[in-house]
Image 1 (cartoon, rainbow, N blue to C red):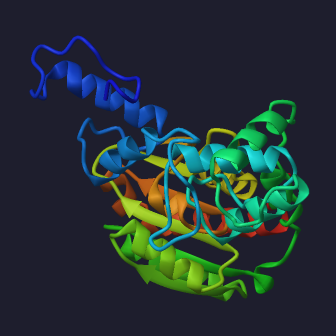
Image 2 (cartoon, rainbow, N blue to C red):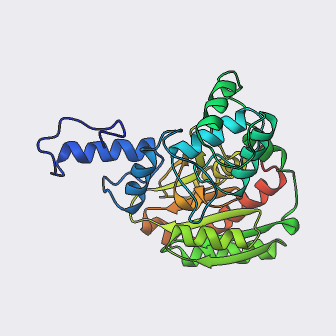
Length: 302
């Protein structure tokens, strides 16, 4: 935790004490993860990624794909210079390689798709004067979202635990409105994201049930916010705020795997507390469908 810039005041090294828990909570909040104070697989993976800085290692396309803050920094700098590396997600995929090769070609560097010492040095030099506030990834995503009807929409409804009834009802309502709606269930967020990507969906809505307070989340990272995800998250939160007894945080930008690894606008709706959700399940499903329909007509906002 200390290497990532969080924590201090440990009572004993090697002991998970209250100071350690506080550091984990702070790290989770800063990284857009669920704040539970537990260093589980997602938090540990995020800690590993946070340890990489651009230039620490060679970056290139491989299987499994490289992940880390150095990859996100590379994507951010390429995007600021006008080279579309895809969304800034810290995952070195085909879009990042294409953008890197185009940068190398324009900079007169060997075109090998590898972010080595010479490429990194030139990228740092040129991006120091770039407009980092308007990366091409955000502009491209916004321009690619045009108004449409539900009949033109392919939507994946993902059930991530406890929300089967609402997810099924939402899929049925979306189909009745004319959309091609696919219902998928998988508690593993990465597996569900990969399946969703293969479906060619234009939008993803994940549903889960929580015993206590819930939340509405879309994908955001340093230097990048999904415009379509944020707009849909805002519409969903506004609709569900009127459901009696429901308590939802957000809408908030997060880096959960289901939001980070899907390739389209995505929103995760964690519904809580459970008694209110069960009591108003039909209303929740109808309001989710209404938010989706309004989003399709204006996917970047009213």
